[in-house]
Amino acid sequence: MSSSPGRIFLSRIVGQEVFDPAGDQVGKLRDVVVAVRSARQRPRVVGLVVEVLGRRRVFLPIGRVTSLDSGQIITTGVLNVRRFEKRSSETLAIHELLDRTVSLPDQRGGTVYDLAMEQDTRRDWFIGTVAVQETGKRFGRRGATHVVDWDEVTGLVGEETAQGATHLLATMDEMRPADLANALLDLPAKRRTEIVGELVDERLADVLEELPDTVQVEILGVLDPERAADVLEEMDPDDAADLLGELPAATSEQLLALMEPEDAEDVRRLLVYEDRTAGGMMTTEPVILPPDATIAEALARVREPEIGPALASMVYVCRPPVETPTGRFLGIVHVQALLREPPSTLVGGLADNDIDWPRPDATLEQVASLLASYDMLALPVVDENNHLIGAVTIDDVLDHLLPEGWRERDPSPRPAEVTSRG
Image (tube, rainbow, N blue to C red; front, side):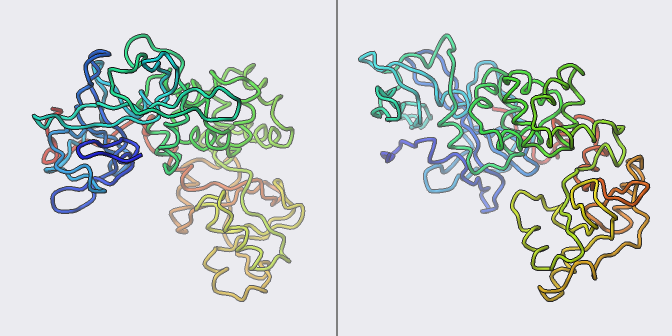
């Protein structure tokens, strides 16, 4: 799809960097805010939603945009750093109009897969063009595509119908789970549910781990129990346990019974520990190796993409069995130590075990103190018989140290950067 002069398809600019007049990047474009008035009148573009440092989304009035169609977006000055809040008269073009079911002039049905904005003679921006894909008549075959004027389609204005998320999710492929979670927070619950319905289980699990407890519970509540159990299996055991702990006991037990027994067992072990203790914060899946494993094997393990940076910062050396709870815990080896030795070296000879490691009942403050004292990103948690039962990472500790609801809060804006909402 090509853009004619003065016409810009939104799929081409979503995710683009936003720069100030000095050429410094200030954020990324995440959506276009429009005022939808009627099926006949083209919606006026009010501004852009820009994601800035800290995953915060702010409003940029369209009048302060000097360039849109040059591969980058340039503004006239600083941004309003207050979190964007959509007004009742406004619509998010990307998040709320894509995948909307509409009818073409000849009554053929289809879904919106793109929109284009263009300027009029007064240099005001409007949504003037809608790209629609017909509903395929044969299973597995995509329907024809049409690019038509806004007033040639029906279904974009008025009563809301069930809406998919295929084309919207295509614009979000590059987003990290935390950024996608932030985007979901800005949406009405109905639209959030529609998007969740089309996320694959693994992606949804990653996103759930980044959402506030209340939204996690809301999303899990709209899923079929079988699918909810599948998503819980994809989550880290400690995050799954935290989420199940927010549910009524009967619901939690129902979901545990639907999970694979091995996954459910890991979660059940974590549910017995008090919140804000080492046991309540730990994961049962650190990188565990026997003492006769080589450095080459250890480096291969920590390179696995599903292992987060904090867990990948060290390996845990234990006598078999090497699943938690393990045999005797022999110590840790930092990834830096792995990089300094020949690949054939055995990890058992490098294990450090000279710290009094926390027990599962260690308090949040004790765990935080150990992480700070020894400049570590993670800590082993051992039982009274010196068996490794899990590891606490610094991100889990910060989750508990930050004020409740921190994911939904924004730092106070610096007065010099505040502009009017417009």
